[in-house]
Length: 183
Image 1 (cartoon, rainbow, N blue to C red):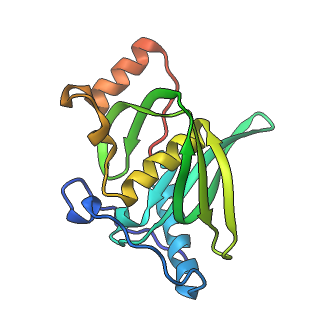
Image 2: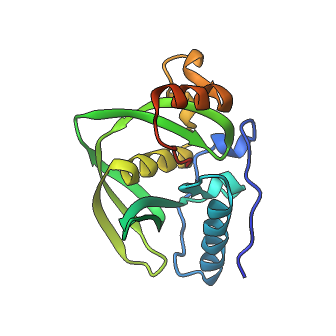
Image 3: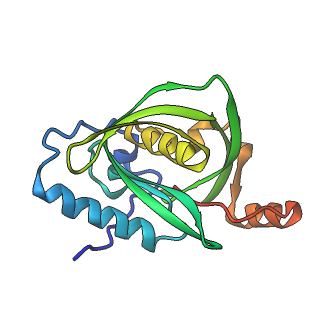
């Protein structure tokens, strides 16, 4: 049965390390670990992505999600990425709000590539190559940063661009924006 893992918080050294490549994708323990990662992400407030380093394991594994519209409701489709890479990216960028389970109650406008060509392995060892845009592309880039020891707050232009949860909610009410997901 999957369990909820403790999420490492800003200041924990593992969040600043470069994660190591997974050598044995077929290790049976990996399935149990990814089940735990998914359960942890789902149980945490608005999570739509989580990386192994965020739960104290320095390996190139993350879960990323995308919101799918189905029969007048939103469902989150999750994907497991092992040894992921960004192969190329669009020339264009987009700026949007991001939060992070490891940097709770903080938000910032972060510039990301609009589209990324990616490669990763599934639990079954299948190599996936895809072009991701929108939310899935943004979350993939956010999680790749985690595997390289980079947090979303490192990508702000200034510390003044980081908002508390209270400031963010006030700003969203003023601008009538919808709820934002945390990766």
